[in-house]
Image (cartoon, helix red, strand yellow):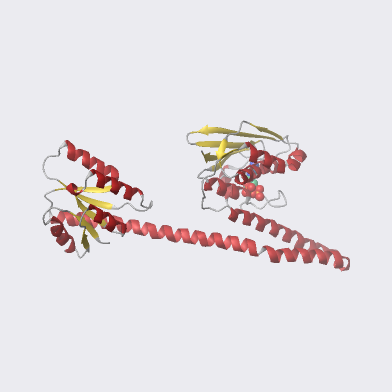
Length: 364
Ligand code: ADP
C-alpha cells in the first residue's frame, strides 16, 4: 500500500514524501507522468499528484488506465490544485478530474495534517477495495469448485446407477418367478427408484452443462426456429392433452438456439403438465422493451401460490410429489441459469387456480 507522488516543481515531491513517511507509510516519487502510469500498473494505495503535472494527454492516458481497471478497483487520487481564486480553467479541470474517478482535490498551500488525513482515508478506502476483491475471488473459486463437484458427481454417478438398473432388470427377468408378491413389489421399488435417480442425474448434468461463464455473444437468430423445435419435441404431449398453442410474432435475438429451445421446451412442457381439467390454452408472446426482448409463456393451468413464485426456480424445488406430477424440479432452475447467462431475468406472475405467466428477458 505505497503512496505514489508526482509533483515535479522544486522540492514539492520530497516534502510530500517526508510528510507521508512520518506516518510510517512507504512512498515512491514518480520521475514524470509516464513513470507514474508505470508505477500505478505495479499497484499502489493512492497517488498524490500536483495539478500542473497532468497535461490533457496525460489526463487521457489516466482515463484509459482507469477504465481498464477491474470493477472492484476505484483507485483514490489526491490532487494538489493551485492556490487562489478558482479560474474558469481550474474549475473545468477540477470537474474533469471528478468525472474521471475517485479524486480528492486539496488546494495549495497544503498543511501537512491535511495531506496526512487525506492519505489515511484514501488508504482506508483502498484497503476496503482489496478486501472486496479477495472476497469476490474466494466466492468465484468456491462457485467454480461447486460447479465442478456437481458436474463430476452427476457424471460419475451415472455409471453405477446404470449397472443397478441393468442388473435389477436381469434379476426381474430371470429370477422374478422365484419371488413372492412382496419380493416382486420390493424389486419394483428398486426399479422405479433407480429410474428416478437416472432422471435426476441427467437433469443435474444438463444444469451444470449450461456454463455460468458467458462465452462470446452469438449472432442473432430467429426465435421462431428453436420454438418450433421445442413444440416438435412436445408434439406427443400437446396432442394427448388437446392443448391449443398460439404464438405471436417472434423476433431475432442473440442466443444459442439450443438454449432457447431448452427454455421454451421447459416452459411449454410445464404448462402442459400443470394443466387443469378444462381445455388448456398456452399463449406465447414477445415484445420489445427498452434494451431487451420480453418473452411470455402464459397458460390457464393450476397456477402457483404467491409464496412459491421464487422457490420454484430453485434446484430440485417442486410443489408436488412425483406421484401427482412427474418431474425432478430442475426445469425452471435450468431456464433461470440459461436466461441469466445472457444477462436476462426470469420470473412468474400467477395466482393459484388461475394460470401462470412465465416472463423472461433477453438483451438484444
Ligand atoms: P418439475 O416440473 O420437474 O417439477 P420445474 O423446475 O420445471 O420442475 O418446476 C418447479 C415447480 O414449479 C413444479 O414442480 C410446479 O409445482 C411449478 N410449476 C412450474 N411450471 C408451472 C406451471 N406452468 N403451472 C403451475 N405450476 C408450475
